[in-house]
Image (spheres, rainbow, N blue to C red):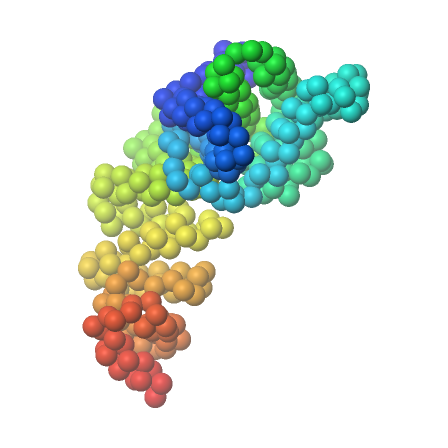
Length: 368
């Protein structure tokens, strides 16, 4: 990674969305500090949301997406499983602070702090690539990643150590508390952005599919469209995994509105159907089922519902009329288990629905 490229990633937190987060959160944390004990809960919520936002920013840098806008989902303190990785940041800050000097002496504290800073980028990079906290905490995987990247990794470590030293200096100054908080928040997001850039710039060495970069050779229209779709799915995945579900769904709906709704919804569903988290695929399937039925593509609609029921037994179409039509299609095709699965818990899922009588009649028919 060239220094100018590193500087480009360090400037990401200064773009509009993350800069607004820095300004707003630093002011709110300043107020929380002034409120003393009453501000503890507010401070906890703000810090949890800021930590979550940092991970979403990292994912957006890896996926070459625009810096994310803060959403309500990010403010949930337990919205993700990546918080354990933040322990490494705590170690870096601790061992380079006066607390580390007090407990271990200046030389040992410096060595331990440098060791923590050395493995930190690897941990966050592994977390971003695999989505697994356990793998991120595995020392063997971290060593292999460092060996693959080489010089770029040590440049990133140097940058993070420099940011930690700057942060320690800023924290010890007499600047206004709000200004100190803003600078520290920038440094925090800049570190995450730099690590995201490390992953992005070394995708080949890490064995990560470079879905966000089109090939340098000239692509035909179909291949170019496929490349654009991969970039879009990367952006949606980064938003969804980061807890920004509202933003991810807005991106989905914008894409659906940009072309034929049936075609757009179908390829988006196929792209998300294999994700470990089935919620977005379920939501897309509920959008897709009525479109397939309206187009008289009944077999495809029924196959789609069968696939979702295998993944999530609680999956149902958006309306009771769609459900009854699909249950009837399954019955006529001789697939009574699917028909029964769809009709199960009808009263709970569609309370006081006028179609209840029809559902009861179809249920009795299937019991014969």
